[in-house]
Length: 359
Image (cartoon, rainbow, N blue to C red; front, side, top):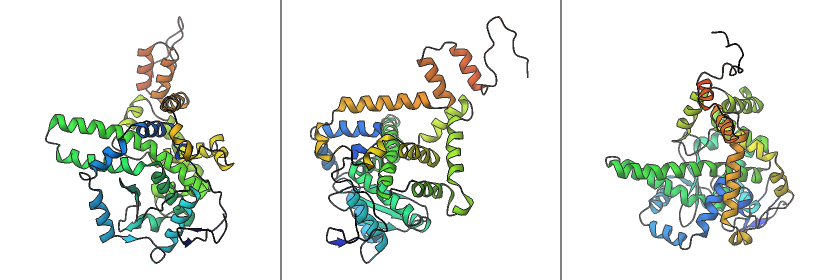
């Protein structure tokens, strides 16, 4: 990619040369759990028409008018550096149509991609003020990745259902049914965020910048006080530390969230950046969009199941270790659970051996 490349009639001047991925399918970077859900939905006949029929019920038109009237639309004349990043990201991921992007006044660092008919990208002033150019480039690539995957449709539905759950909270059964759907959507959406982080890396092609951005979202604009390696060590401690009580608390903490925790995102992205899958994409070997129609749901589900199984097997979390051991045929369930809630303080006594001394 060279200076002077053009897209949509606009000249882009990228800060450095980056690899472009013509015709890339979002399947190339999607997390297996995200990919299996998307492939299945894309195979449903009439699925898109159903969602478009729902567009009259969803607040999409209202949201578009709100951002148009009360935010700043990114263009050559407004937030020109963000406009260049957006064009550059769409060029690298070969997104056919550049989505509109807005900057909205909000001190909280945030960005999102929403919309049923057409995606729109919204970035908060808090995020614009927090990140440097390369960190922001990864964020813009993250949101363009959402657009390419079609995540904006389901994010809009999630926003609608969340608002609906608040309105019908007084109806016990109705609220329970909606909350069950919301919980499932949130689990999928957390995986979709991991997918979009990968897209951001493909656009920025600077893993340290991606890490710095996540670190700043967690700890603010104090980069001189923070360290990427130490931040990743937090993710390792989070994954492996504590006992079964902490494992349960982790699950309860993450359930209401639409995004994974930032340390987890950083660790997942670093792992993918070091994988053969990432290197193959950078070398030009990736699935093409033209072949999406031939993607098999069964293959995607197998990859998703294998991914979850691998996560359980490789996890150092006490609960995941217990599940992995039991799946492998290990016995002594009661003893293992008890030791888990005791913080795994001591190994089980050997048969016929002396009992451990009381602490």
